[in-house]
Image (cartoon, rainbow, N blue to C red; front, side, top):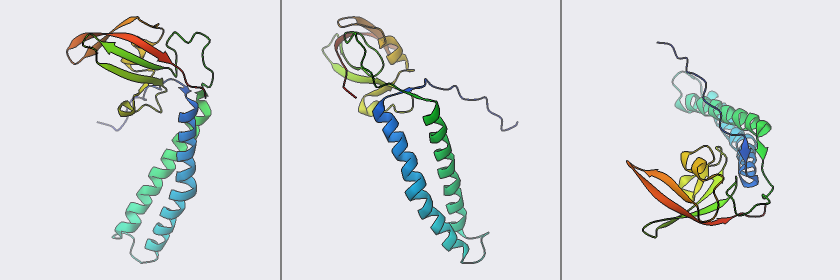
Length: 167
């Protein structure tokens, strides 16, 4: 069996201004701070002699490859994404970048923000626009009901609030 894997499906090309800033900051940090530090550590380890059994050298080189790979990914991704910094005219409808508050039949509420696939963080309430929940929410209006799958069952949620933040 070979190592070939089918290409990963690309996510949507949209991102919020905050997400783009975070990606640029990560790339800058890796390139200007992390990489020089690791490069110096590898250089120091190389001066110690036998590189074949030098763990600092081996793992330092591995870390450099990881940093380079991540910087390359971030750079390419930043070139191809579209930053959505406009608030839609119809603010009573769910679009990309909206904060949506849902309520179930028991009165439990949950708030999500619909963001790009590069910036989702479920614990922070940021869900990717490619996720099933976000796809079910996009285009909905205030007081619409949404059927969401929770585990093995379907639960009805109601859109109780939609808000947008100025970029």
